[in-house]
Length: 73
Image: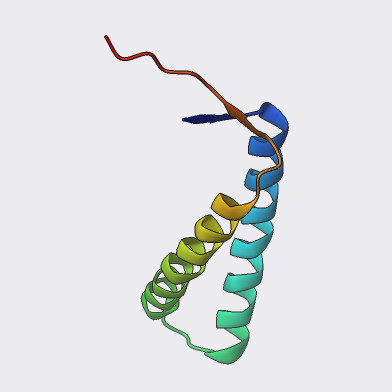
Protein backbone atom coordinates (compact mmCIF):
# COMPACT_ATOMS: atom_id res chain seq x y z
CA UNK A 1 0.00 0.00 0.00
CA UNK A 2 1.00 3.59 -0.49
CA UNK A 3 0.43 6.91 1.19
CA UNK A 4 0.91 10.31 -0.39
CA UNK A 5 3.30 12.97 0.81
CA UNK A 6 1.98 16.44 1.54
CA UNK A 7 3.96 17.77 -1.43
CA UNK A 8 2.29 15.33 -3.81
CA UNK A 9 -1.17 16.22 -2.48
CA UNK A 10 -0.46 19.92 -2.87
CA UNK A 11 0.80 19.53 -6.45
CA UNK A 12 -2.14 17.27 -7.37
CA UNK A 13 -4.63 19.73 -5.88
CA UNK A 14 -3.05 22.70 -7.64
CA UNK A 15 -2.85 20.98 -11.02
CA UNK A 16 -6.43 19.73 -10.69
CA UNK A 17 -7.72 23.24 -9.99
CA UNK A 18 -5.84 24.51 -13.07
CA UNK A 19 -7.38 21.71 -15.15
CA UNK A 20 -10.86 22.51 -13.80
CA UNK A 21 -10.46 26.22 -14.62
CA UNK A 22 -9.24 25.35 -18.11
CA UNK A 23 -12.17 22.95 -18.58
CA UNK A 24 -14.67 25.63 -17.54
CA UNK A 25 -13.05 28.25 -19.75
CA UNK A 26 -13.03 25.99 -22.81
CA UNK A 27 -16.63 24.88 -22.28
CA UNK A 28 -17.84 28.47 -21.94
CA UNK A 29 -15.83 29.44 -25.01
CA UNK A 30 -17.04 26.50 -27.12
CA UNK A 31 -20.68 26.56 -25.99
CA UNK A 32 -21.73 30.15 -25.40
CA UNK A 33 -25.14 29.93 -23.76
CA UNK A 34 -27.32 32.18 -21.68
CA UNK A 35 -28.45 29.22 -19.59
CA UNK A 36 -26.36 28.77 -16.47
CA UNK A 37 -27.89 25.32 -15.96
CA UNK A 38 -26.82 24.12 -19.42
CA UNK A 39 -23.29 25.43 -18.90
CA UNK A 40 -23.09 23.79 -15.46
CA UNK A 41 -24.29 20.43 -16.80
CA UNK A 42 -21.78 20.46 -19.66
CA UNK A 43 -18.93 21.51 -17.35
CA UNK A 44 -19.80 18.73 -14.90
CA UNK A 45 -20.01 16.08 -17.60
CA UNK A 46 -16.69 17.05 -19.14
CA UNK A 47 -15.15 17.62 -15.70
CA UNK A 48 -16.09 14.07 -14.73
CA UNK A 49 -14.25 12.72 -17.76
CA UNK A 50 -11.24 14.98 -17.33
CA UNK A 51 -10.96 14.04 -13.64
CA UNK A 52 -11.04 10.33 -14.47
CA UNK A 53 -8.05 10.65 -16.79
CA UNK A 54 -6.33 13.07 -14.40
CA UNK A 55 -6.47 10.48 -11.61
CA UNK A 56 -5.42 7.61 -13.88
CA UNK A 57 -2.39 9.66 -14.96
CA UNK A 58 -1.43 10.55 -11.38
CA UNK A 59 -1.68 6.88 -10.37
CA UNK A 60 1.16 6.16 -12.81
CA UNK A 61 3.41 8.85 -11.31
CA UNK A 62 5.54 7.45 -8.52
CA UNK A 63 6.78 10.79 -7.18
CA UNK A 64 5.46 11.55 -3.71
CA UNK A 65 4.25 8.03 -2.95
CA UNK A 66 5.57 6.29 0.13
CA UNK A 67 5.16 2.59 0.56
CA UNK A 68 3.72 1.50 3.89
CA UNK A 69 3.95 -1.96 5.30
CA UNK A 70 0.67 -3.45 6.40
CA UNK A 71 0.82 -6.57 8.51
CA UNK A 72 -2.23 -8.79 8.44
CA UNK A 73 -2.74 -10.86 11.56
